[in-house]
Length: 193
Image (cartoon, rainbow, N blue to C red; front, side):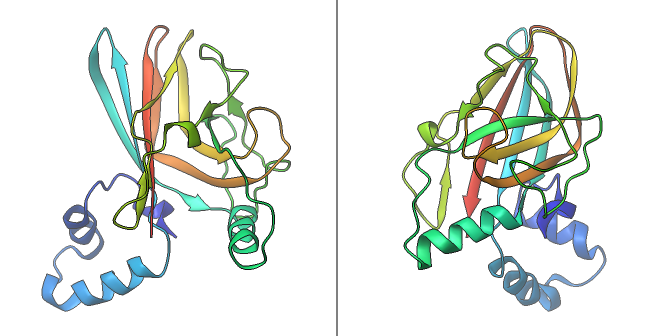
C-alpha cells in the first residue's frame, strides 16, 4: 500500500503531496484512518562518502504476502517465531517487486557487492525496544561498498543468505541510489502500526 508514497519522511509532507490543494481539515481524518489500516514502515538510507552524506533516499515498504501470513500465524496460531530478521539490498537491474514475492521466488536480484556481502546484516540484532507503537534499529545497518553500484531498495528476510526462509518485505527507494567504491550505505528501517 505505501510503496507509492516512497520519499516521504514525515506526515505533513505525505499529506501535502497526496492532496495538494485540498484543505487539510477536510482530508486529515480520512488520511489518519488509511494510515491506521496498514503498517507504515519507513526506511531511510544515506550514502556516506569521505565522512559526508552525499545522498539520502527514503522508502515505505510493502509487506509481502509471505511475511504477513507468517506474522498472522505466529501471533494467532501459535506457530514458530522467527528469531532473527536480516536486511539485504536489491539490485536496480530487473527489480520488479510484487506482494507475491517469496524468499524462494522473485524476479529481482540481491546485491552483494559490499564487504561481507555473502551474509546479510542482522536487523534484529540492532533493534531498540518497541515504544509508541514502533520498533527500529537503534544504530544504522552499514553496507560498505567495494564497487560502484546502483541500489533499487532493501528487503527483510529470515535467513542470512540464500533463498530459504521467509521474506517479510521489500522496499524500493524513491529513486535508485548510486554508491561508489568506498561509500557506505547507512540504513534505518522502522516498523510502525
